[in-house]
Image 1 (tube, helix red, strand yellow):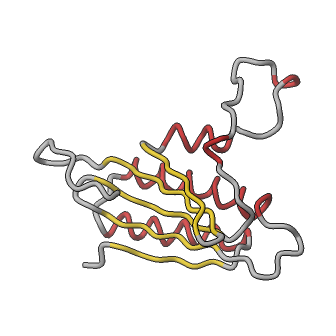
Image 2: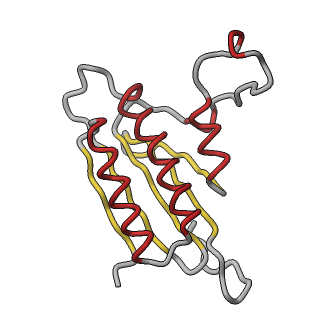
Length: 150
């Protein structure tokens, strides 16, 4: 059974639902709990929408997004890579959720949502690409943490 998938996109908003469907199928095939698969799809939808809408300029002629998903014994690891300008979403300030709507700064809710549904996030910029790694803990039968990729 394939333990990993690699999805390529040209960075169009229309690609996002199909990417979500592929990830859903992968999660079902590999016995990923429904809640974890739902959280991954929600996070990917938010991240990819932001990348396509804000990370690429209208003049970007060669947009590329790569998504890799891998199931390990105790972790579901997803990497989202794009060739947009360097941007670390983890440096975005947390939104003030208690402030009245009319006084809140625009933006920031998407990454807040991602942080709330994904266990661990890591960003790096390498070879002119943004790479965001999402790690979701999977239930294990032995109670251990399993192998964790570094």
